Image (cartoon, rainbow over all chains, first blue to last red; front, side, top):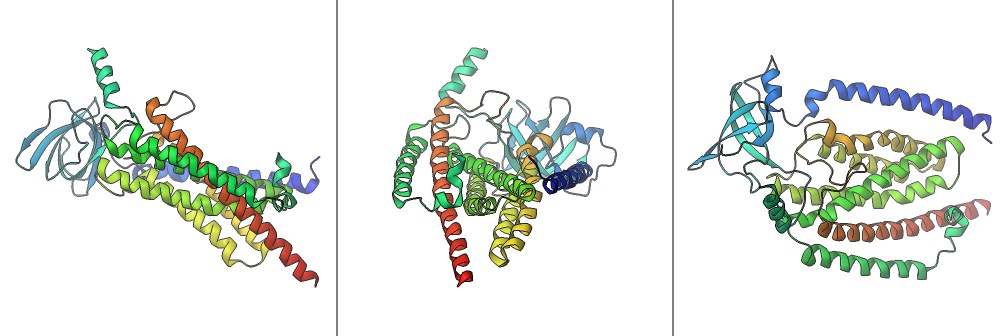
Length: 142
Length: 236
């Protein structure tokens, strides 16, 4: 059914496609550090050459009962349930910023456990439901 | 069914068919909008801003499917040299581009009230931006290269390279830390969107698919007509 020419073209194309897939895969793998939007507290904890000068982003969950507001400044803890980092920030936070929800903070580390943020972003998850359903779910958990 | 897409068949396409499709589009779109804005509930965290999802998610999905089809058709055409496939691929591109743009704009409008920013260069948003550039490059290569076979070659190369970007878009939220949330609708598990929110989502998806079909059919017919006219002029 296939002509010789078509077979040759399939052969050529598959070689090119496999090669490019391999190249793209390797490039993405080596670029991983630049492709992640934020680091988790554990990644900060484990890394040896973390910069205290450069702006970085850390992300995770806002720990329960950790938000402390004082005027316009706000302190809280970002956790990935293994490691934690204290964050201090001055300014407005997005509406969705709350305890037990995702957050991304942009700023500088002052040491491995303490982060001074100049921007707070809220990260939300993939669950969407009406308030009544969420209430019902919460009730059934207790 | 496949035969309906043959170039001579598309010329038989009547305005009446298009008008009927437009009627369906308006009907489903109105029901979809009413559901999206009035009948569906607000989200438990996001409130009313979740309604942007009903435009954002279907248009992103269609943008990806559209480019995927263009890429696959380019591959098949490269191997088997089927003359009308490039015309079909070419006709899908403008609508696909528009849906990519809608996805990015609505995503940005959604980002501000939820994340707190209009735009970030995380892996999902960046790869979606790259898709927009691939669409532009594909469309421009058809516009600016006058010779058909040359334009076909170059646009096919662009589409086939762009094909690699699609899994990157799809899985970017799983492979890397992104600000964008992971997919709610996956093949492997049940959707994490409540069914009352799935109804407007599916309605809007249907409306947008019909829109895509209308634009595609009209564009494809025009392209085939252009070829026929060119041929006639060459014989004179």
